[in-house]
Length: 221
Image 1: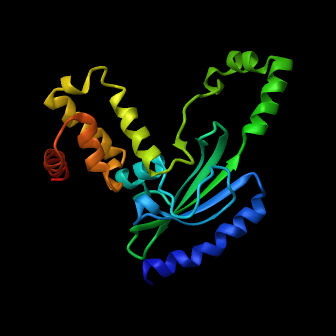
Image 2: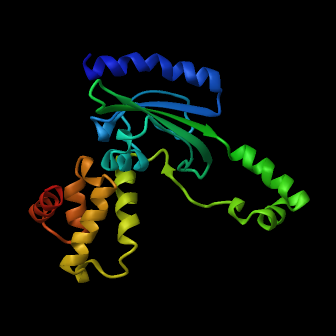
Image 3: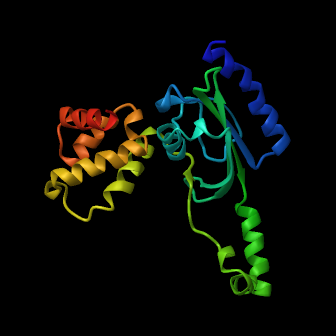
């Protein structure tokens, strides 16, 4: 069955899951063959995205790491919307008959209101301190797994900034080795899967586009 027909069969599931989960849920179907405009169906509007929006930062990493080859899904990880609300998210990998990834079905459930309630209870009974005393591993984590609601420009910029902030130097002072390291890190994050990725990275680190292409070719060998 062609990939397009396979993904079409998942579109009714988007509304079905949303109607079960309720208004504090968002369900999105992505066609991963179009990273820049992957959203082909959605219900709910937690992240403010629309049809034709891009993949998320986490989805790009999944494509590069090929995590889908050993797993069928990723469940219950933390994500955060552009306005700072926290969600519990899960992703199902849609594959063809040869186990190639063709799409992903993502479910985001808003948990910020529940966390606010929990925090109020914790304040009353000092549960945070009690939890740390009993089991330090249960202390609240600030780790963020995914960013929701970014458009293509915001997504690309945040991925590039995330890498560049580790290099505390002026762009003009970056050594060739540092530039190569930056390209490698951005490649792992899936930046070059996005339209205009090479052009933007070349501009941001002071390299020519052919130079970026050449280094990427070396990495892929």
